[in-house]
Image (cartoon, rainbow, N blue to C red; front, side, top):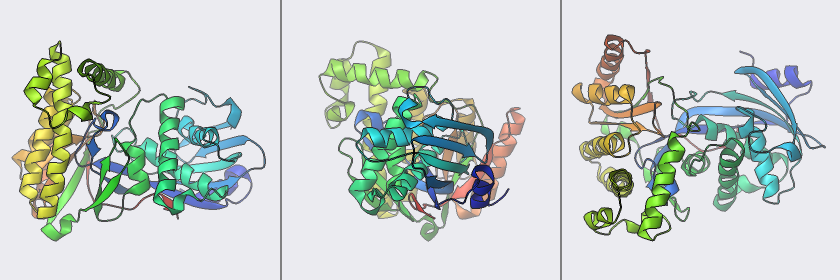
Amino acid sequence: MPRLPDAFATLLGHSPEGVWSAPGRVNLIGEHTDYNGGLALPIALPHRTRCAASPRDDDLLRIHSLQDDSSVEVLIDDVADGHPAGWTAYVAGVVWALRRAGYAVRGLDVVVDGRVPLGAGLSSSAALECSVAAAVSDLFGLGLLGFPEGRDVLAAACQRAENDIAGAPTGGMDQAAAMHCTERHALRLDCRDGTHEQVPFDLSAHDAVLLVTDTRASHALADGQYGARRAACEQAAEILGVETLREVVGQPLDETLARLPDDVLRRRTRHVVTEIERVDEVVGLLREGDLAGVGRTFVASHESLRDDYEVSCTELDLVVDTALAHGALGSRMTGGGFGGSAISLVPTAEVDRVSEAIEAAFADARLTAPSSFAVTAAGPAARD
């Protein structure tokens, strides 16, 4: 595959002004909490999406990808819900959202090279959005990459692009992770007020590895299931008389659940409340160096996502059960669910054993072969 600047020149007839990149993410704990005003604990992945870009003096967006033969040309003012369609919505939506926020942005020539696994629950969409947002900030002199509040603005624009143009009703955790995560740290993100704190996360110091397994099971957030979970949480919050379910954390859980009229709402709420509590539990355990305790909390999270939130699947459960049976300290699904990836906390000496066992279990079940790889906590969106 040609170098990104060379590919840009071939496709668009001139050299790019620069190249920017942003990471995918893995969420250690805190699933489906972001749109409930809760807590999350993501790390940035070494896997990144890069975009080569140059500004234009008109309002035309010319968008290409090294992974897709299709290309799109669209005017910023013509960007709307569902237009353009497909992956280009994430690119065009960012420029549209920044203009809607009052920033003086114009057209863009852009070529993207996505190296975050697609459909794996590792937030390839936010990596794409945030790489483009970083480029736009620099190319049009917005200066937003240089300070945390500016990165918050970019993350918000990326979330609006995903919600309003791409049509995926996600919370803002993925974009915040891509903009704020740092190397060898997890990000304790408070999704109610947007504050965040760096938490040391260097497993090599404890002779352990975070193993990500892409199940390669189908994964789509815009197919209605994600939106249905979010709607249930909003309904529960309305019945309980609070803005988000975050407001009932710390109250007697049994009493809270008894106020809800049906079992589905009770189970959805129980997951959200206990998952928010698990985030700070893991933060404390990481600070203490108690990886066994972190592993147990991972398992509790997966069981809650599987049983109360019902967003796991056969492949995710198989990864978790197999990893635990072959030496992992803990394992859980990560991301929105309905497919995607699982993470396992594994002693370094057991990594090959766990990976091979997962692959064999999938083969025995006649499932598509998964892909497992170890990751470290990486850095945020930046100019390359």
